[in-house]
Length: 125
Image (cartoon, rainbow, N blue to C red):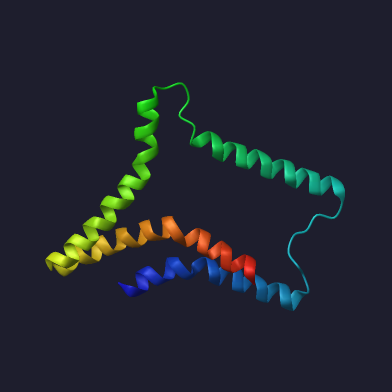
């Protein structure tokens, strides 16, 4: 069970480490724009990507209470999954149930903290 959890958690760091080793041995520094036009193109693509991500969370022309319920679905699901994990551990449930709930709780915890924490560490190095 521990190995199942560690592999997905450490995979992004491992791929970045492999990429850094390859860049060190080949003298490359990754893909960098060569001129101003490429910089502008990359910035435009990033802007379009961010706009598309922002549109995903927009509810459109719906009632305000529907938009509020929709906005609370992710935090509500995260709360119930983590509370369920704490509940089955406290109740001393069967090991298989605890293991499955632990997997769900790990997914939620990574969703809440993992990506931002990894980006913070990546930016600091």
